[in-house]
Image 1 (spheres, helix red, strand yellow):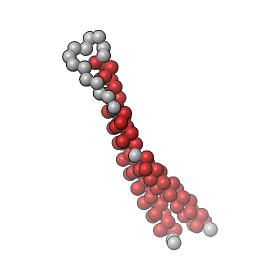
Image 2 (cartoon, one colour):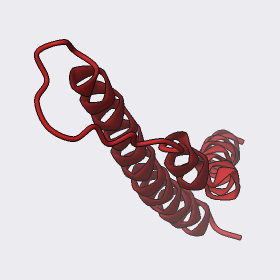
Image 3 (cartoon, helix red, strand yellow):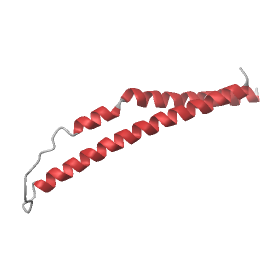
Image 4 (cartoon, one colour):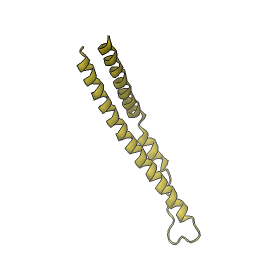
Length: 96
């Protein structure tokens, strides 16, 4: 396998890993934002000056659990690690 091929595989692995991790981080942040907003709304409704119905937004942490998808996180990190290993191999082969 040529050095150029190894470098291309390293770049592709890095791109794939970065895209997967960006997708997962966006999903996790979205779920955490939803949970924080639900928590804040619940607290505001319990304040003495609140008027109107009180809606309890329970089980909002279930959204965080769904958003984690650890398999995708592990896959993203595996691609980034593979990219680093391939870059190291390309460097060693080039200097050999």
